[in-house]
Amino acid sequence: AEASQRATDMMNELRIDEATFAERIRKVAASFPFQGYIPLTEHRGITLSQLRRVEAFMEDDVHTWQDFHKGTAVTAETANLYNVNAYLIKPSTNVDNCAFVELLTCIDQRPEWFCSHWWGEPIKAFIRCVQEHQTLRRPPGDMTEWAYWVCAYANRQHSLNEELVKDPSKTSFFKAMQLARGILLILDSAATPLTRIWCAYEEYVALTSDSAMLLDISTATDSSADLLTDGLTDAEKALDDEGQARRLQVHRQAAFPLELLCKGLRPLLHKAEASQPIDRVRILNTIARRDLAELDEPPHEEHEKYEEVNR
Image (cartoon, rainbow, N blue to C red; front, side, top):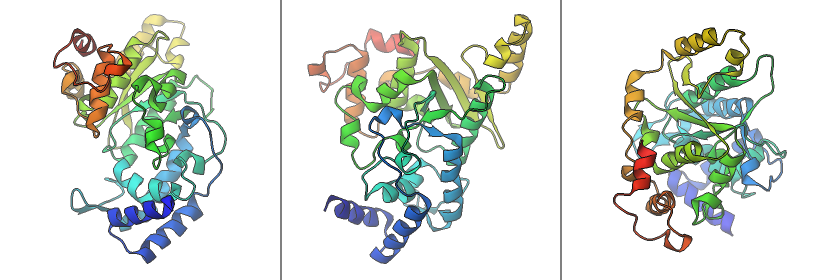
């Protein structure tokens, strides 16, 4: 009954009739059959080759997609995670009430890196950033595919209340960050993640973690991506001459857009936004070190902890 109601809600969201929706379900089920449940959300990372499967499906299917918020058709170049969630993730995971990763594998995929990003980033740009990051960050000669934790694919979208609990430090986001080597912050051309409260919280965790998490920053170019790394890559560390390694890092990072760096130098944590207002309240109160019982209280307009994060 719950799946039936969710299907009705999706038909209304996509503005399609029952027959068209049934055809969509057949198509996504054929492309992404259920593989099995992975109990721990934080173990549902996604690999680059799996992201490529999402991209291939999107390219084949996008001619039927509409962005009703913008009132425009969606193209392969503009399709973002909001679109993919509406046309692929939610329809394909409805019957089994599973995460999208559970349509790709039934094996735990512990994340090497946690992706902090904005859902409005085009899927193709996002994948270019992940590809460039994996290429540069993997040790020389290591061809192992890394898993990246991406909330849309890891969380069960039809049961988000089980993932997003009151205390941010108990959410699937936080647990996944604790497993990762670091956070990959992916910026669009407007550096939108720097204005989003969940992204701000994720960077806060990286910068204050006792486990010395790394914080890398990437942004897509027309054909690839630029990357700022927190320290040297393994390939650069392998050089005998540390001075040369540092020069290579500087040269590699010189192409990163200066305007994005400038936006990152002016963060205003307490001005950051959230799709769900209660998330903003709880995250600000968490950063301000308020007790669990106070997490739903109106947050402070200003606080010394906000300033610590801003710095």
